[in-house]
Every structure is written in structure tokens, then in C-alpha cells.
Length: 407
Picture: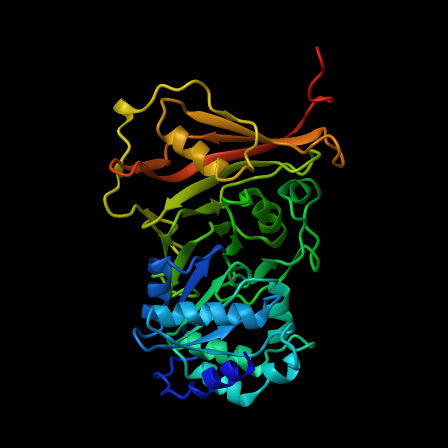
């Protein structure tokens, strides 16, 4: 792999694009929720296109990876498959024989990134990225400055899993693996959350593996703690493509790939701090299907091609919708789809831990309610839904112990 790295780095010489004004960001983001498969042509082709098309130079940063050589090779191979000319940037603390501090300030590496059309961050541990690309005093390394230069003049920054987490100015750092402890105990600044790299700006909190791991609710304590009113969570093998991501009215998010993304809007939400336990009233949750668009500046939604409003005359007459594990795999999206295709106004989901967990009697009830500004769309041929601005309320509840008794 050492020879391969040197070979790829040697190919890095390309002409720089015209530089953008320093206070503007003309570039794009491709934020992937993790688990990106090599055969997901729609996502890979979009990255290559945004980097300049066939033959585009794309820097691969395996900084977060436990096995950087392997992850770099897999990513480079995928990019070659879709027409790019990738090169690997050996800035990775787990890469044998590399001084990551020295590499992150290497002027040759920084120059190669600055001249590229795009960058791809692999998955792993996002703290490795931020720790490597910022100096101990918090200042930018030469590589991080080069990333911003590429981005400002119109390049694309893509990242999967850990590479997605760094996109917001605050990221999850070392939180509990499960969602419930985050809801029960909140987040500790500097441990559970820490500064990200902020490519999407300071007003949007980003999280990944959203539906597959039921993580939508863990964003909420972090958003409240840091004052965010907008959260963007992307599912696995799915990407949110963000244009003009930092400034301007054209801050559009387009969802592409396998499944979808969630948008959490807390601009009208309240929390009662006099009550024990996490609670939230009047939040809005939206599910964006592949092809849908959302504008970060205006907070407006545009359904994807072929989507039509759900005809309320032909929805299902369902019994009450009640989910006993709202954090289950895709559970929240499934619940929202059932609500959209029903004659009901609300649905309920609960979450609690097993009897051997700390304070197992403490749980949470999530109520999802269709309100006047809610909108639902469907593609009848594929039975694919887009569901916007459903009201979400959360309150702590107590679960009686034991959960069951033998008769």
C-alpha cells in the first residue's frame, strides 16, 4: 500500500480552479449517512460530477479509519470505477509509519488538496479527523486550510459516517452507543459532543446512521444544548447533497441514494425545564425520500419527481398506530408513512430499556400529530412517501416493573 500511496500522490498535479472570494463558499457537500456501497452509482456519480466530471482529481482522506490503508484503497477503487482520478492523503493517526501532525502541515499535501476538485472522508472515528486537522492550540493545519480553499472556490467535500459527522460545527464525539442514555442524561460538552469542522455552517446539526440505528432522537439533547433549531439526519447508503452550504438563499439539500433523511425543526419547540426528565413540545419532524429537496434558508420542501399529494379520500382506515420501540430499525419512518396513509390524526411510539439497565422504569412517549402545515406526498407506483412538518411531542413516562409476570 505504501507504493500505491506514493503513486496516487504523484498524480495530484492539476490546474487550480479560479479562486472564489474568501467570504463566499461556492462548493457543495455530499453527506453520506454511512454504509455507502460500491454499487450505489447515484451517490458516487454525483460526487465525481461535482468534483469536475470524468477524470476529476479527488483527495481521499482515511483519517478516521481504524485501518486507513484498507479504507483508502476501497474508496479509491470505487472512485476510479466511476471515472475519477483519486489520490490518497496519508493524514491518519492509525496509518503505520506516519507522523500525523507533520503530515497535516505538509505543504505538498496541502497544495495537492487545494488543486483537487473534491475530497472524500472515509468512516471511522470522527475525533481522529478533528484532532488531526486542527493543531493542539485549535488553529487550522495547512491541510484544513487547503480543504476550505477547495470548498470556497467550488469543490465538493464528501464524507461517510464519521466523514458526515464533521460537517456541522458541533458533532457527536464519544456518546453512548444507545439513544436512551442520551435522552435520559443529556450530553456533556467535550465528551459526548465536541466541535466539528463546520462545512455546512453553524446553524445545522448533522447526524448519520439515522434510520438504521434509530438515532433521530439523540440529536435533540445536543441541539438544545448548543442552540440549534435545525437538524439533518441521513440514513445509511444515502446522501444529502448540499449546495451553497454556508451562505445564501440557494442552500438546497437534495436526498439521493437508497432511503432518505430526517429534518428536525425546533424553531417553534419548547421544553419545560421545571419538569424532571427530557421533554419537548411542538417540534416538527419531516421525512425526505430520495429525490426530495429542502432549502436550509427558507425551510421549504419540494417533493421528488412523480410525487403527488396523498388523497385523503383513499387513505387506509387504520386502528390506532402504536409502536413499542420507536428507536427500532426504520421505525420512525415506518410510523410516519402509516400515519400519512391513514385516517388518523396522530400516532404514538414509546422507548424504554431492558430490566438490567440503569433506571429501567424511565422511558419516553413520542406523539406524532398531523397539523395544518403538515404535508404528505406519495409515488403510487413505488409506494414511496414524503412526509413534511409532522408535529412531534416527547414526554418522560414510567414503565411498570416487572414488564411481565408468569401466569
